[in-house]
Image 1 (cartoon, one colour):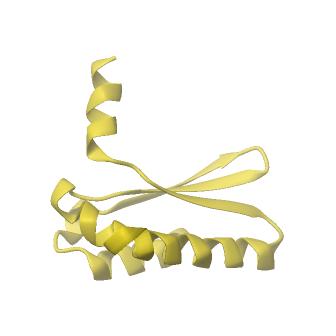
Image 2: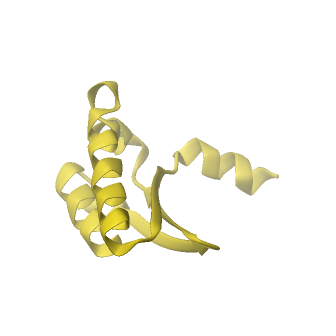
Image 3: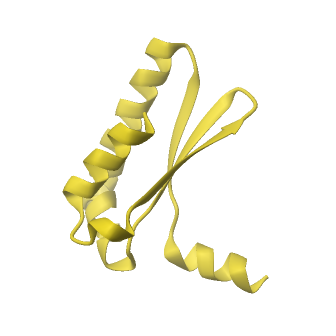
Length: 86
């Protein structure tokens, strides 16, 4: 699933080299974290969150089919900076 999300996100953004998609297993949940350049955040989120909502729906549908809990999270660059300072 990580590869599919990465392919879709790279098609949406201008700076494809800044795209980082990670799969993290937490018990019964697989979390897919997406990081993009700060300038591309709006493109991934979309107007009123429509693009990210569609990505989450896709991930959820695949999770149901595989009988696993999958979640998609967009990690904001500012959140990374705050975590690094702590």
